[in-house]
Amino acid sequence: MHKEAALSSLSEGGKGSIKSISADRPMRDRLRSLGLIEGCIVECLHKGPSGGIAAYLICGAVIAIRREDADKIIADICDESQIFP
Image 1 (cartoon, rainbow, N blue to C red):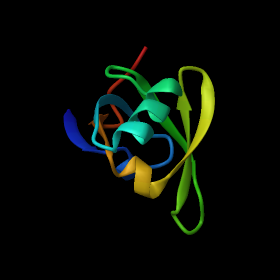
Image 2 (image 1 turned 90 degrees about the vertical axis):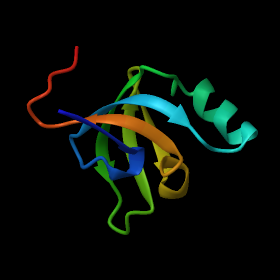
Image 3 (image 1 turned 30 degrees about the vertical axis):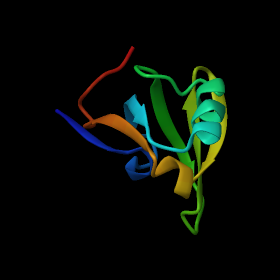
Image 4 (image 1 turned 180 degrees about the horizontal axis):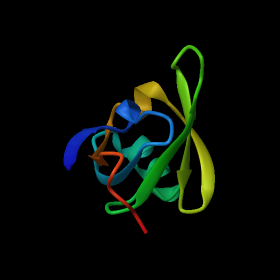
C-alpha cells in the first residue's frame, strides 16, 4: 500500500519513492543535485533525537537533510511489506 507524504514522515528503516519537491528553486536544484529526483528510492537510516535532522540513503550515498527541507519533499511512502529493488 502506498501513501503520499512528506519525506520527513518516514520512520527509521522506512522507504519511499520521490514524487515532487516543493522547495524554492535554489533548494530544489540543490536537492536534485544530491540525487533526489522523481522516482528515486530513499531510505531513512537515522533521525536525530530532536527530530531536526535525519540521514537518508539516496542513490548509494548517505545524505543528512533538515526536517524543514524534508517537509517539502513529497514521497510515495510504502508500508513495511512493500519491497523495493
